[in-house]
Image 1 (cartoon, rainbow, N blue to C red):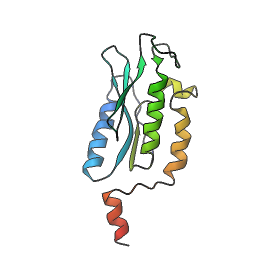
Image 2 (tube, one colour; image 1 turned 180 degrees about the vertical axis):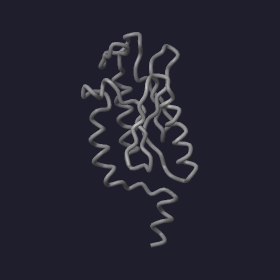
Image 3 (cartoon, helix red, strand yellow; image 1 turned 45 degrees about the horizontal axis):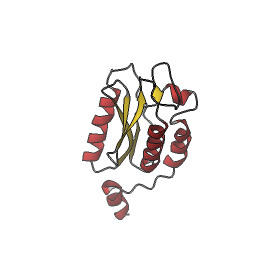
Image 4 (cartoon, helix red, strand yellow; image 1 turned 90 degrees about the vertical axis):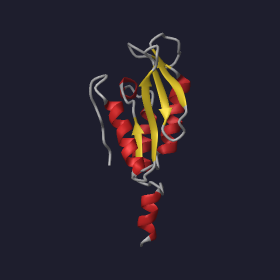
Length: 138
């Protein structure tokens, strides 16, 4: 199943993702992928759901030499971190990618993992508590 949450900036898409992760984890399922939040400088911080590690994804101050949009300059290191976190979370029961936007529509940013997600989700190997119980009863 794929769920896409869309909406204007600040409407609560990331809040919905946080709440969904909490509900799913409380039910014993594993979660992976990335979440984003605004940085103090109005840039974007990316966080790995499984690792809890963070990296700067973008800045409004044009300090990075990666891809650019009208508002942000993107940190190549932040994009690579996000790709790794998404790849690690592909076999999770819930995979969250909380930042698909202008870069991905241009084939940049996290665009290359979208096809990977589609292909690998069909062959998921995540064995969480609930799935182990289900398969052990067969």
